[in-house]
Length: 129
Image 1: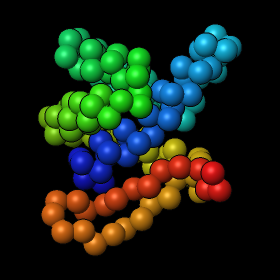
Image 2: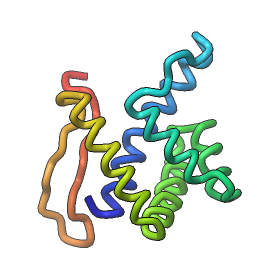
Image 3: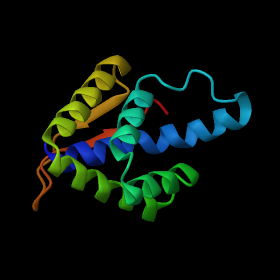
């Protein structure tokens, strides 16, 4: 996967996760959150550690995951980190692939012909929702 695809897919997976995480924390104290997308989130949080701007960007989206401006800010930080650290890009790509396999059809990948820089477009969501 290219860097933009990794960042966009990661963001698309994190937003519902963070939204649900907030609900679970409010209801149940947040037990058993680190699985699947939780591993992806934990790796990002670890990578952002020590970078004040990245940490703040992640904290802001944690507080309001549905805010488009916060999503765009996180995507920009992710792209920057992925471009600078190819090992991190490989790691996230692998986690995304594992989550795709684990979800057994919850993630739908569509290849589209688009003019411009987009090479892969990923649609993520539950089938039948």
